[in-house]
Length: 138
Image (cartoon, rainbow, N blue to C red; front, side, top):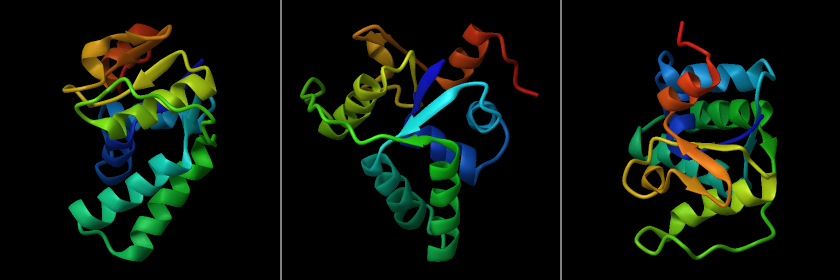
């Protein structure tokens, strides 16, 4: 199963261990799911960890490296311009298309989650994803 982990899921899983986002990342770490990330999403992850959470640079580097070590790095070759209210969310769709993802796992309830599905890729919150695949949070 191929999944794209949105930046907000990675932030929650890495900076606030426990709960559904952590379980999703754990499944990727165990290779129970194949998770994908792009250079753009890794840069966004670093920015959020540093600027919004105020984490020191060495911690940001550690957490970003951890995400890159768990997820497969893919650089999308296509461009999508479907989400006009928040164009940055198009980067997640581009990654999903390039990775041929079955799921986008996101906490973005405003722009991504309302789509429910995009080009055959299901869009779910971490809790919804875990429930759908039958993997409970410990």
